[in-house]
Length: 477
Image (cartoon, rainbow, N blue to C red; front, side):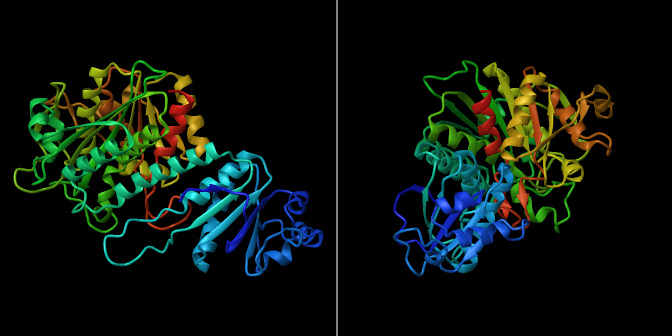
């Protein structure tokens, strides 16, 4: 749903006016009486609706008598303005309006935040049956200080976020490792990044023991997805590598999950990889001046046939051994092989995103993701600044050595699980064994999937991580 910068205000069902002061309203055509009435209204309100725009805005030309009007009071806080964009979309959905004109004379930054929340709220979920989406094909016009270039960038941002959401929302019988790889290859061909798909034979030849162990109980072969985007004017000669957990469905394996509120939404266990795919799509469409590689070890985790079992000892890609005590701690095994694979690129930085632990959800709920990092404070501060700017918030946890002691094994180099306490940190300590480069680990188990609509992130996959990565790469990469 690209926004259109247009001076024409005709043929729209709804006229949305963005303002902060009485003067803003009068400048945009509101009568002095209506503007004063809004100013005197309950200060807790920020959205005011008029059933006749021509009555509310008698000084505005070319308004149809049937056009309605909503006046939206914006603030200095970007996230509050995004949420106001979301609330306006909810009104449009309720009244089944399809043609909207948004007008403002405010600074571009306030408008942009509102338009971002508005646009992200317009995700049209993919339907797999005959029923139609509640979101119509909308026409949205805009007149204000946000440039056409910025509107185009916003469209790319939203479409890339929607790609991630759609991948997460697909059921496992529509998105298995093979079809996932094929979809990424299609996106790469369409948008302009290189995709290499490594099949099971290649994964065996690379001795990715973690990926192969997790895959043993499945009838679907694993696929290792490698994505490369590098512009000729790249600012970084060494690549930034993004690694995403790509478990397309997680039953827990022989350590079987319960169904209700657990296995029933485990199609979302590849949300970290979806964020990586979405970020690569955006970078390619933007023709960004950077060098970024994306890595995804795609497999599902099932209890069938020759499934790996608690008590097994497996050999990882780096040659170390792991005693498996819980087959539902599978994501760290696939990520470990991918992190080791990344070493060959001599990366400037590696960032992994994963729905890794229930412990992260217990600690933070759905409001933030957990961060652990080996990087210096400058890089970490830049990431935190991006997280706050796009409201994909992060809370940093330590990687103190003491948290790794419970991973010690009597028969292998380490166990795949440790003590119950501090589980999200212990998972990070497990992964730390497989890096020799600056590294950030983001556990997105909480904010990656929404069970109901609460804001512009929608229901189902939220696309968490796409906006964070793009802002960070723009700021630092």
